[in-house]
Length: 112
Image (cartoon, rainbow, N blue to C red; front, side):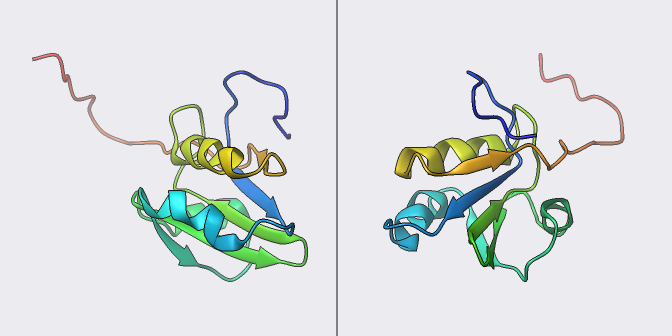
């Protein structure tokens, strides 16, 4: 499912098509928040499963570059990554194909 018309989209992987925007223009805003690592081409969820929370995966294919964060969903890294990259170029496409991280264990009450 591709979220193209939504005020609060849930991102997963973000595809950057080959266009006239240099790759470093996409990586500069990401490098402020994530350590971007190069991965061999794999399914976005597989890449997300191999990441730590402070990292993002960059994968190349014949059509462009795919960026994946650790988790999808409205509060996930992929939402943030998608919004950052959409500011660089409107050609960026995002797909909701990375699940939110599930945490097993007790809920921590932060209302102290």
